[in-house]
Every structure is written in structure tokens, then in C-alpha cells.
Length: 283
Picture (tube, rainbow, N blue to C red):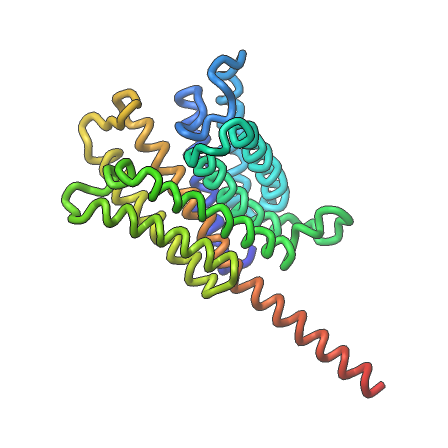
């Protein structure tokens, strides 16, 4: 494995394992990430099957002998998940919440693409090689930058809801909602247009990590009967929300770490071209 990306990959894998475990326990998909309608026959069994897949794939990502195969199947799984968000976008493109859901899954897919680009071992494939190495990392960066923007925009569209998530002991809760929304959009634009992209990706990762532990953590670990509006009493919703934020933060960290590798690969390619030009000039 690439040593710089081992922590991010491990966090990404742990997030998959945790979300998969929750799907198996509750025989349902993650809250807010419902890829299959409630009326679909055999929905519970499908949720369990997907959960088991996520657990197995997450474990496989943690080990060198299986990471290549796991990176391939995980990318296909995330691509299918992303495509299942398209119908809602076609039906209701005017609803920002639809773009929010698409953006979150696209951020996750971008993280999966970084893993694929680095660990799939398909550099010699006539088709898949365009998604590996530097080209794959560039695609992941662009997709991630685009995906962060509607996620940040949702803080501004649903500012009161976002402010409600800010701990009550903090002042200026509405101000924090606006600040995080604008901050996420700025991070997305920075990553997209290469304006301090690595710093922007790390800031995005930090914001997500703080949100996970500051908002979802207390509702999961310290509340006697955790409950969110519209959800049943119990730890399922806050746990799911915590690990959704966890795995998106891990995807953000994967992108941040890959930006160094992308820049290094680009520099090496440029130097090699310069050397070849000089050699040809004096041949």
C-alpha cells in the first residue's frame, strides 16, 4: 500500500464495515441513503445482503492481498449507489435536498475512486487504466470538488435545521450554520480549481470530523434515549449519521492525501518529458 494513504484507507474501510453492520442488524439501509423504495419486494433481505457485502468489502480493504480486488468491487458498488440517486434528481431537480443526497454519495464515490486509482492494479487494462494513476486521481478530485458544493449549499438552504444541529452551548448557532456552509463551498471550489486544493481538502475533512464527534457523538454515546426528529427512539439514527459522516470524512482525507501524490506524479511526468526533449535535441 501507499503509506501516506494507509490511515485514510483504514478509516474508509472501518466506515464501510460499521454501516454494513448497521444494515444487517436493522435489516434496512442507512437513513437518508435509501437506495431502494420501501415498497420494493424483498427489501429487507436486499438490505442485509448489501450490508454483508459492505462488511466483507471493508475487511478486504484492510489487507494487502485483497485490497486490489476489494477496490474494484467497492467502486462498482458505489457507482450503482450513485446511479440510484439519478431518478430523484430527474424528478425533482428544484429540491436542494436531492442535490445534497447526490453530493454526499458523489463524495463517497470520489473516495472510492482514489482507492481504485491507487490499489486496483489495472494500470495495464485498455479500458480501466484511464481511471488509475494520475488520471484517476484527477477525475476523483474534480468529482469531489463538485460534490462538496451542493452539500455546503444545503447549510444555507436549510439554515435553521443546520443551526439546530449545532450544540446549544455554542453561541451564534445560525452563524455557525452559515459559516460551515460557505466554508464547505469554498473548500469545494478550492479543490475544483486547484486553489490550495490540499489545504481545502484537509479543512473539509476537519469540518466533517468535528461535525461527527460534536453533533452525532453526544447523541449516540451520552444520551439516555437518543432521538432525532422523525426517527424512532434508540441509537440507530445517530449511529448511522455518525458513521455516514465518518466515511465521507475518510473519503475527503483520501482525496487530500492523493493531491500530494497527484502533484508528485505530474512533476515526475513533466521532468521526464523535459529530459526526453533534451535527449532528442542533442541526439
